[in-house]
Image (cartoon, rainbow, N blue to C red; front, side, top):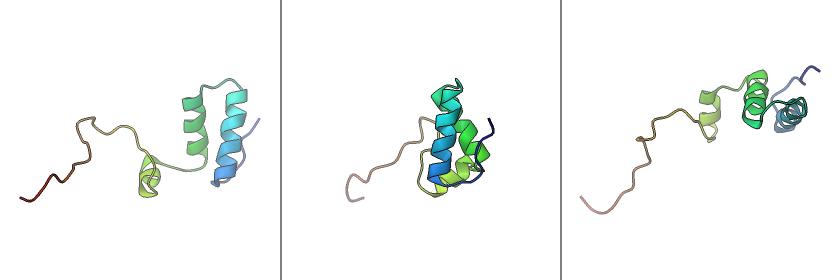
Length: 67
């Protein structure tokens, strides 16, 4: 069945559920649904979401005192 059009949370959630019922794994269903919604990793990062693919060495730095 075709997926619903739109980029709201509700639409994305329904598309993910439909894809998982069709037999896709969770990660693949999420990727397909976000792709259909036109969401790129850059857009997800801009609104504060998690973006995988960065180097594991690049971690947030903590301030440990006065220089």
